[in-house]
Amino acid sequence: MRPEKQFLVEEISTQLDKSDYVFLTNYSRITVEETEELRSTLAGLGAEFHVVKNNILNVAAKARELPDMQDWLSGPTAIVVGGKDPSGVAKALGKFFSDKEKVELKGGALSKRLLNKDEIEELAKLPSLEILRAQLMGLLNTPAQKMVSVLNAVPVSVVNLLQAKVDQEGGANA
Image: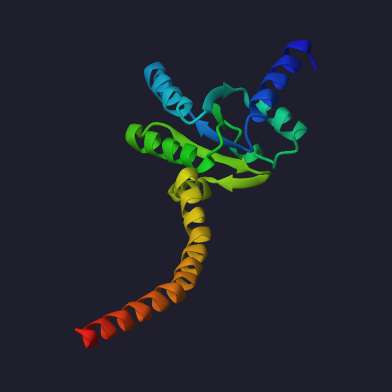
């Protein structure tokens, strides 16, 4: 392989190393301004949008042992990588694509699993990573709250019983 192509493969490999997912898009009808808008949106999520050559991406993906994405490597291709929240990135891409009606999602990979367009759209419907963490913490916290309530019920009942006894005796003496 020529040194120039080897350099490009290494560049794409570096991009692919930024996350455990990669989304492939067709960018043929998107303007420069829209590309900058998309990049800005993705940057807020820690993700990046890069235009790539299909054969270079194919070589880099094989080197990283990603699933075979050959079916989607035709026409203009850009990759979206980076960030810790693939669901949030998929959601941002979906919103951008539906708003612009120009760009389309081709497919991608998540943790070495091939994802088609429909699966990425389903991923976009998931709650964000922060919401999922909050829901998990809520689930983990609920049994502890119930246990504290049960343990607290016994002393409260004893105190209430003693208070009732004091009130009863106090009322009898008056």
